[in-house]
Image 1 (cartoon, rainbow, N blue to C red):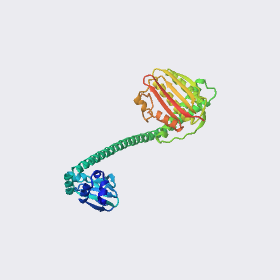
Image 2 (cartoon, rainbow, N blue to C red):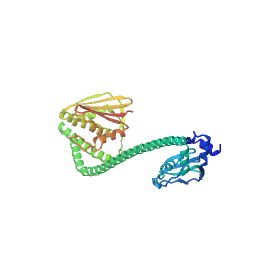
Image 3 (cartoon, rainbow, N blue to C red):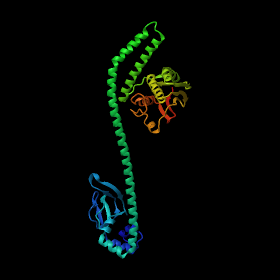
Image 4 (cartoon, one colour):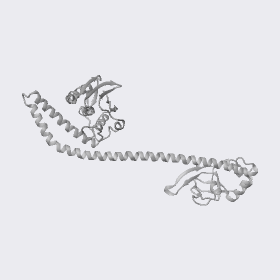
Length: 387
């Protein structure tokens, strides 16, 4: 058996042929050499030959220039060009020699004569071609699935970028507004604050007057703090001045300040403080967190109710839990609760409270979680690392 016949015997579509058939097949085939980078066949041209790779490697591509896409790399004993010589259709792809390659070429006319004379060769070729088609279909399907996944990911990324741009635009706008507010309020608030301090320094004041002056100072400071935090939030920057603070004591202070307003709104406050630990926090900003959560709870109890604040030490973290018996939050709105400018059902505010709250907590390496049952209750839990 000659070298060409031995090579043909190793090719799957011819491996069942006997020596006589292989000899006849070798006679009608010619060996051709192609240098690296040479186009062996071109997409769109009429085909008249089947090629079998004896040595080297070829690349199957579709399209041209930037739109060109590689579909397969074929190596020795692979074949290509079979569809064109059987269907008389233009080539469906371009095949390029990736390295110096030696190919066995079977011309259409000689190949057809061979198939007529040897039906078993036809059967083997049909089996192989069927397998090749299934393999190609599978490859195309996998490629489409991959492209579909990439498109979904691209769309998701686009939506994320779009939302971030909208958020940035909103924050830029609120930053400009906040800057104007702070500038416009600075002088009148300074006057109010100055008079309140002056009143507190007077001797012989009655308790109601002293309480009124203290309340004025407290409210003025809250207003200044709120506007400054809105400005900081819009600029995406936060400066923390951390101190070791006893969490239970901080909650007691905040509760003492909040109790009067809660009672006026028929809200009963209960404390269950068992953390007995310290956290390194910015007390001013953490007060803002807790005041905001209490304010939200009060707003949720339109006809009064119960607010329970409890603390607990667990897994080296302080758990500060605020449980109210208010109107609750439905699942859809619960997902949006930390989004800037979301203020569903709020009596007051512009919807930045929980966004600011979440950011402050996270800046302290903490976490915040909200659980709610519509029409029944809401529980907000703040987790802070202890020292």
